[in-house]
Image 1 (tube, one colour):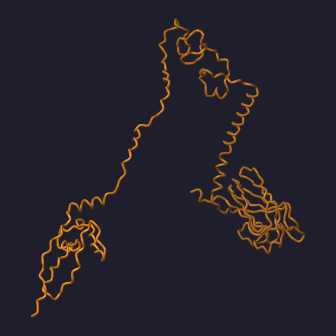
Image 2 (spheres, one colour):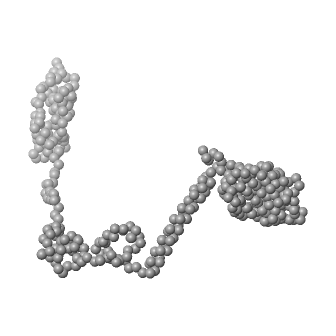
Image 3 (cartoon, helix red, strand yellow):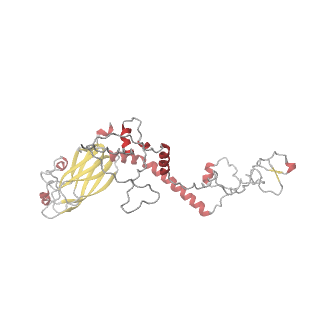
Length: 387
């Protein structure tokens, strides 16, 4: 008969650890991870080796028990629950671990004053008070001013109120300058301090010279004002050609009469029919009505083509004799260039009845050439300017 195996000693249940308790807290909706115990779990005590004794103050290590047979039936034995750490001690320890040492507060500096200190002000003298003149008490209290009747001390030379001299001076014998006599007809007495200007002979002569110059300029301006106005109108007036009514010449080459110089055709010309420069020969344009002329164009030679300039002599200096409607005559000197084409010159004169052009010298003069003029054109004020 075999004996039944001895029952295994009851196995102690393992102590609960904080890690094991954590899953239980996961099922709780009010679980707060800050409330978890963060204290470290103490490591298990290492049993001493054989032949050594446990240190004093420690519990003796239990004897080594053989491992139970896993095939034998066992009965669970309730284990004693380990004491859980108090919640208050855990929170206090955690709070102490979070404390940070703080230095003592330094004393604050004193606040600056709201009003900055200033230096004491300098004393300012009182403003002077203007004293009004007192009432006129009469001459028994002083000498009355001849200008404002204010009484003054006998030793004063000028009035205390109006500053005028205390004595009246007879200035009727003093002769004032002409310009002061012109603007000061009433002969009012000057104010205090206005002494008469010393008059010398040179000053008088200079004054008369300046007056004569001014009067002369005024007279000249008055006389020349109409001419200046007319010159301004001529300068801005629109030009228009003016044709003479009749023509004349000192002599003419056959087939080249003087009217060919005024026919507005520049390939026909007038020539005196004499060789050399033709000095003294003239051509004349006449107007039935007095005409105002502004410009003049003279075309030298027999044509406007440059290759035909050497076919005849060209006029150089021409004297224009102008006859006005009142019979007076004036002269103008016209100097031409040695070039082809028309040459414009200013020729402003009014009320003209006749103009004579006298040749004084010529270019390229020779015994085989005669001086010639292809065209002479007059220009006056356009009728559009009168509208």
